[in-house]
Image (cartoon, rainbow, N blue to C red; front, side):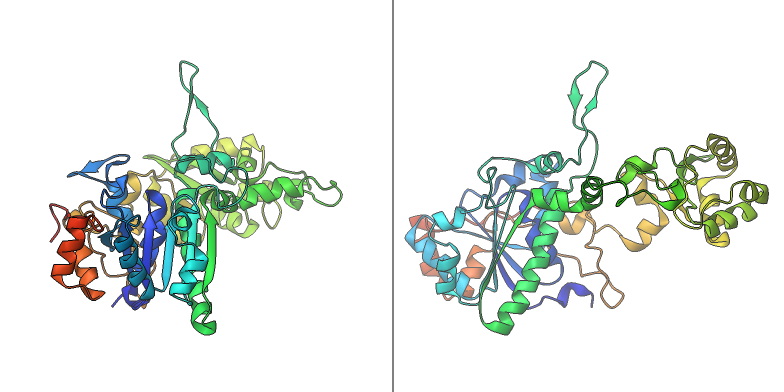
Length: 417
């Protein structure tokens, strides 16, 4: 059995809209029971972004895989009472939407503690529950632009455009929230006292870029206190990858059929490379420093390496790297990476037959195995009757509450089993 049993017995009640619901996905992939509570009209994530696959967005199919859905009208007193019963049996409540939404419905942290003293309450939002941007509406890319991760590009007509890049905050934020939740659950079980976790996706985007942000901060100090690397004669380089532009021994090179990343920044690796290609003369002429030497601005060496790397295919250079102990990496894109043998070995797609779309597994190996494949993302309120029966409601009660409007109808994805 894979890691899907690690969180067995952990019940998470998730109130989410759109992408932040990924918090619960990390937990459900590892075996937690995640119950998505949505209004009778449902989370409109099912129609957001592209592609739309047989009526459901890929964003929904991935974000809510492995979860159950119950449709409750929390503005109705009977609906609120159903929610209270659910909370009594829960370990965690996730508010993945604008902060304060549950509090306005009468389910703030203090009220949650009265219902369940050991509850862990996690709020995740765009800009957080405090600060001047707290109530500013936003979407995922906003957190990356705020954090300085995105540099606008200019098209042929001079218009500014959003560049192609992965979203950081909307993915890292839920991951940090899941980490905080698990720490809080451990503490709550030890102390009997519930805890409150609050995460902003914008904060997470900035934190993911800590190296550049902290480097700029360090450079505010006097130059006799903060310098560059000894290999650069202590000259300060631009933070992060911007400082790699002039690199030669740490750079991308064209091959016969693509590109590879060459990373011989340590002298030992550089010597291995030169000996391996029978060009020890390059090492003798430019041995460099022992560590972190990129041979910056050495265009003569760069010209030589450019011609050398063009003599072999990318696969041949990877084989060379393993044989001669030289760090050489593939250069893929989001399309070609799926054809990479390392990708196929570590991250086999979960089939569209199971989840509605081919999806990547949570890449956490437990006892040598990936988690068991999750179930398909639910339709609106698909598990309402099942969950309510577990809470002690009989079918007559359920039908009456549905007629009253306290709960919604059950919808099932067309291709669900």
